Image 1 (cartoon, rainbow, N blue to C red):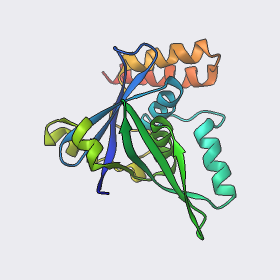
Image 2: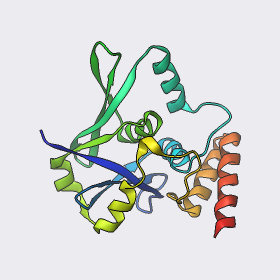
Image 3: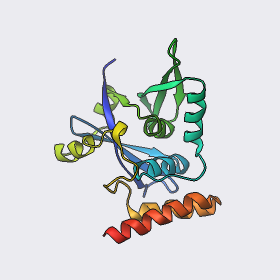
Length: 194
């Protein structure tokens, strides 16, 4: 089965599905794939895209620490199927001796790709059926920012201030005050740059 490498282009609050977010994946051929993800995964992805760090590890960071302790490395995320609007993904991991495939949600897969610095691959069938054509300039801009080389504070805004404010409110509602404070600080910084 043929597949293509994609990058996480951005993240936005979903207007059509209340409480959800839309992550946008982009492939080199100029197509975007919009994906609906859950708030917790969106929060983790947004924090990684914006270069924010928390005082305590988040779930995906904890999993990375645990896998590092046992010499397990995630090699890639593979989005292999789209059924009834649901994307199916798996994480390909190795301990240096054997390789295993672990099913994961697409949101977790995207978060893990940022945490591990590994590529995301998508079946060409999915790109053809769910991909939306875009200009090459937008995709090239996304490709310039290689996941493996993302500096801690990202110079480019990838999540809107409005979406960050919404995530901050969710963090407060969930009593995740450290995360809310990090997001608040990022919002202040972005507003100061504008």
